[in-house]
Length: 138
Image (cartoon, rainbow, N blue to C red; front, top):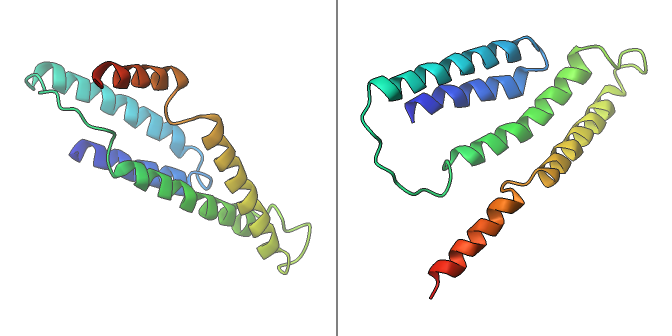
């Protein structure tokens, strides 16, 4: 769990403030690549075989990831509207809150559409899970 905590924090910073510093995504990719290689080396050389245990998912981290994504929509909409200066030429400061609402709603719509287009489990996996249930239910 300790190894994953570092990745959770990195995901939070990248999702929340990635729009302000886009180059951070490249650094996150490089560090995650190196982290994966070093963890693989540790598992290959230092640790014994892991005893298998059946679990349903990655636990509470899934809920935390989804909450960070929804908060990141608001943070990134605020960054785009209030600090980047993209909407300064269209209207004065009176229209910026409305632009913020429209950008946040647009990003939320895109986020929800992506969740419906890319399901949690692929169709082939769902078919296999249904076959297992029928196989083991007497």
